[in-house]
Image 1 (cartoon, helix red, strand yellow):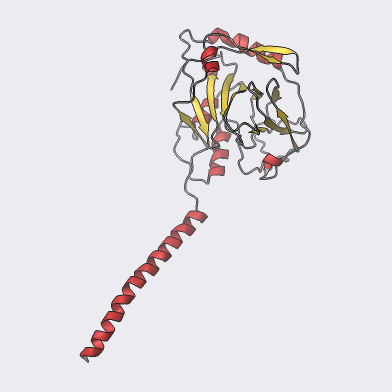
Image 2 (image 1 turned 180 degrees about the vertical axis):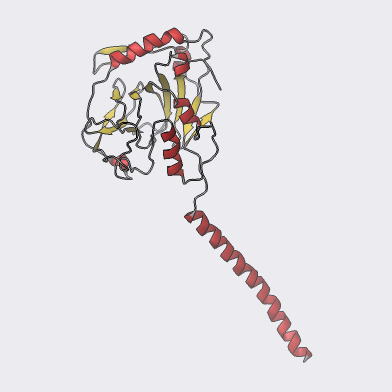
Length: 298
């Protein structure tokens, strides 16, 4: 009997490591499936950064009002003075928005950012219920601006593809010296298609009015001011958080009816460039420029 016991015991001992290995493999596979099926909570796709690359233009803008020419319209725009210590925010795509002026220091009239945009980045389709927006690059660059083919602004409560029709979209490219105006309530977005592989600077976004823009970019996603992660997949978290501030973003492309929204081509409705209105906002907002040039920070 003893020889049989001796023969059986080694076989049982060898089976234990196999059982453990199989168990580990099953557990790992289960964890992987759980990860794929149930995404972990995700923050909205914006967060504040404390440092950003400085430039001579930004430093100059704190001392004087820079003038830019727009040859296509035959006008010039005198910029506002820039804050010496602006807040800046980074998106999931890698672009950084430096908030050169905010409603707190423009008499509530507008907010302006300089976007530092790497090649092949840009926001997903979105719109602003209560804000119009300008876009213009001041460096050699190629930005594609997407907009609706018809001017049919969305009113509060309407979401394209949910309880409103999906708009027909088109796109145009703009470069240095050109400007695009997006009326409130119209779906739009942009994409940096510049051949230069370096980050493009001097791409300005101006919102009017712009209440809530800083909170939206800071990732505030609850009426109590919380920035805690939302228990939702990333695209849903982004849509919900931005909708809180009246600027619904949809990374899935549902607002425009297609996930490959970067490939949209076709005509875009035009409402003019409204540069006279923009200049008036800049001029009137200077009455609230802070004496120390610093502005308010949280």
